[in-house]
Structure formats: structure tokens, C-alpha cells
Image (cartoon, rainbow, N blue to C red; front, side):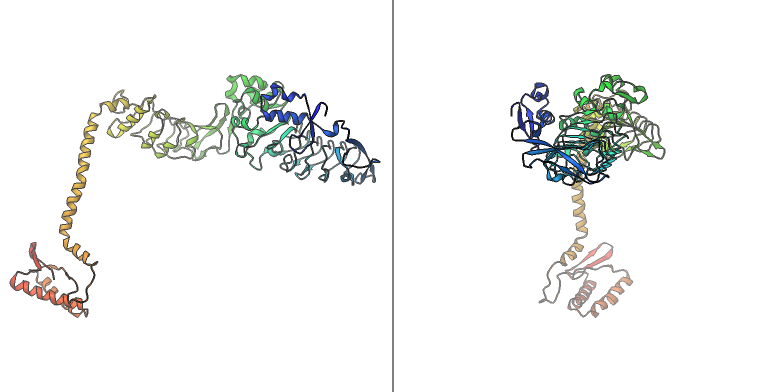
Length: 617
């Protein structure tokens, strides 16, 4: 109508936008659709503020029926209909509760500031309510059900109450999208990020400025915009407030990636004194326009309070003065390794994307098993210790620098492959004789060996080939030759080729030798093989002899005791067996023996060395 056009930014509110809005100018549109959408939402006005011909906007009177202010009624002499909207204004009074009949009217505006309300009460029946002003009362708590399913509610002011606690997710309850939410000068100690950043909804301003206490920012639901692919767009005001974490820092998202999700909106932190430590430095890798959005507009009025060398320096000047950025660090206590005499110092240094863990000269015998949680790369300083072997650690993939200088390193295990090609491993003063084969998966420029070398021999020849193939820039000398690189050694190591040929010839004879030994052994054990084979042959019950070969016995015929045992004990034992097969065995055995004894020749019996006989019966 006229100079306004109907626009429902969130699909719930009936708002009107200016036809000639500045939101469409190039200075705004270059930031994208989300920025324009936020600009329009914040500039738009409700339909009852526009002089529409068919809309009536009237005031309601209030009648208080007791002196305590707990019972009151709204009054009007106008006829009620769907196109009549009402406003209820009663400020600087003594009301403690909203009027009893408040749900009977299409109320769009309520102002009960400067009264005695201890809580907001049940207002969910006010489905047309657009604005609620309850500032300067004595409210102490706000539930997340208070504004539930109030789609038209656009503006809430609860400033200068006694509020010390807020439920989680007040601003993003289903069918609710409050565009302006003011809780200035209250008594909050803790604030969840869900009441600061609203997912996939535009907000114009959320203000907690001038809070009476420092605020601890939490993230109860572990909200992470990267995991949920969530858009964040809103202006937040924390002017003159101290808090433990920047709201964006607790989201668990890399600041560089956060720009993709928080494409519009800004944080205001005017008049604040910053702790210019690692928490602020996290944002110094952004473009200044994004840094200004995330860390506070009008930074010219904000200065550093700590650390002492940066005290009083303007934040904007610090952003551009890179020579001071190395001072923006934080000591990290949680998870910093301290085991026995091996005590480390951990420092977060966001400007260089580093968590520095300094365990130098601490009598450490191994790398730390646990390191602090961090979104940055790890710089692990272990020089001057007693480490002999480098074994697997879960954080190897995150290591940017590992300094093992002045350690008697003798070996790396196969986990060396878990380092990345972006790592730098300094192992001067080592005692290495070789490297694990897994290092060929890495770029040789990962390693800095210094002047200490490894033996250049045939076993280490592959190391020289690997370094030559991948064009290593940092030298690795031969410890057994003067000023010779291992890459140069491989071109002169012709004896390794002859040794390799001899080794191949030797290895090729091994199968032949095994075959010859097997044939000889099978010849020696041919009778055992026959017996073993016979166990798997079927038995024919129709013949007298149960097996083709019953038994093989070998003994010395010159030994009278053995001969006596065989014919007087073993033979009788066999005869006592009632089984047909064993009885048959005994008879055949005796018969063959007698033939052999008198004639010294037989068909199934052989004379072996040392006068040993074998019966084949």
C-alpha cells in the first residue's frame, strides 16, 4: 500500500517493507541474500502501524480491583471484531499480574514497564501479540515455554529486571521467531549459546549489554553449525560485559569455516576492555570486515586490558600491527602432559595456528600419551630428553612440528606413516641405523637429520632411492663415509647388485634342496608310509588275511633276549587275542620266521644292516 509492500520474512509475521528500502543498495546486496533478508526484517513495520482503511487500532483501559495489584480487568467501549487491534499500556504502576481477561482481545502491543511483575505469566493465548515491554520490573526467571508458539511476537524488552537464569533456546522455540530481544542490565551468571545465536532464523538484535556480572557462555546441546549446516544471522550486543568465551568460539567450528555459516549480522562490544589473548587472536586471521562483525563494531573505542604488554592498545591498531601478534597467547592447563619428572608447558598460539607443547629438558623417556584438545596444529618440543624409540600416538596426524633434537633416538615404529607430509620432524643427534619401510609413504622433506647420518649399506639402499625419487632437499649423510649423501651412495654401490645376484642364486637352490631331503626322508620311512596308508584302505571280511601287510618288525637276531621276547611273549600275546585278524597275524608271523631261520631266504623278509630283520607278512 502506498510506499509499503507486504513482506513476511519468516512466513509467520504480517510485516510491511518500504518500496525504496536501502536494503537493496549495492553496499548491502554484495553480502548476499541473507544480508538483504535481515535488513528488511529489521526495517519492516507491523500492519497496525500503517494507516490501513480496514484496520482499527485502539487503546485499552485497566481497572485494578485490589490494592496488591494482583487482580485487574481490561475495559473498552468499542465493539470487538477481527480487524480491531488493541494496545495495553500501564507503566509506572503497581501491577503484579496481567489482567484476567487479557485473552479476550486482539492485543498487539503491551507496555507494563516499571511495575512489580515477578514473572511474565501465561501469555500464549495472545496469538496476535507483536510487542511486549516488561522492562524495569522484578522478574527473576524466563522459561522457554513463555513465548512458545507465538508466531507474531516480534519485539520483547525485559531489561533492568532481576533475571539471573534463562531456559535454553528461548529465541528459537517452534513457531516463534523474536526479532528484537533485550535483556540489558540483568543479573545473569551463565548464558547458553542457544539464547545468543538463532539457527536458520534472522534476528535483528539480541542485547545483554551492561549485565551486572561476568557471563559464562555454555553450549548445552553441543550446537555446531558445520554439522547441522545451519545459517546464523543476527546482531548481538555484549557492550560492557565480560565473558569467558566469545559466543562463536564455543561452537566447535574453525573460525575460518564459521564465516561460511555466519554470513550476516555482527557482535557489538563497545566500550569493552578485551583480554587480548588467544581468544581474540583466533579472529585475527579473518578479513578485517569479518573480524569487525565478529568481535565488535566501533572497535576504535575498545582497548586491551591484558596481557600487560598490550594493555591500553586499541583493538583495531593491534589487528594491523602484526609485530605484536606473538604476544596474544593463552596458557593451557587442561590436558597438558605432566607425568613424573616429565612436565610440559602448553600454550595456545592461534596466530600461527599452533598449540605449542614444550617438554624440553624434562627427563622424558617417551612422547606424551595425551595432549590437550585443540582445533590447531600441534608443535611438540621434546629436545634434550632421553627418548630412544618413537612409538605410535593418536595425535600424530595433527603434528606440525616434532623436535627430537638431542635425544638418543634409535628407532621409529611403523606408526611413522601417520604423520602428514606437512609435518616437520627434527631428529638431529640421533643414533639411527635405519628407518622403517613405512617412511616411503611420506615426503623425505618431513625429516631433518642434521649432520648425523645412518650407515650406507645394502640394507639401507632403498632409503637413498626413496630420497632421490622424491627429490629430498634436506641432507642425510652416510655415517660410515666422509661427507657422502645416501643418494650418492646408491650410484656407487655396485657390490650390492652382485650380492643381490648371489643371494638370488642361493635362494633358488633352497627349493631344490628341500625336494631332495623330502625324497630321501620318504625313502627311509617308506614302511611307515605303507602302514599309515593302510589305515585308510577298506577291509574285506571275505578273506582270511585281514590286511595285505599286517605288521613290520625289526630286531637283532644275535640278541638272545630280544629273540626270546619276540617268540615267547609277543607271539603268545597275539595268540591270546580272540580276534580273527590278530590270530592270523601270529600264525603268519611264526611261519615266516621259521622259514627265514632255517633257509635264510624268503619272499617277504629283508636283511637290513646290523643283522636286523623286517618281516612283511
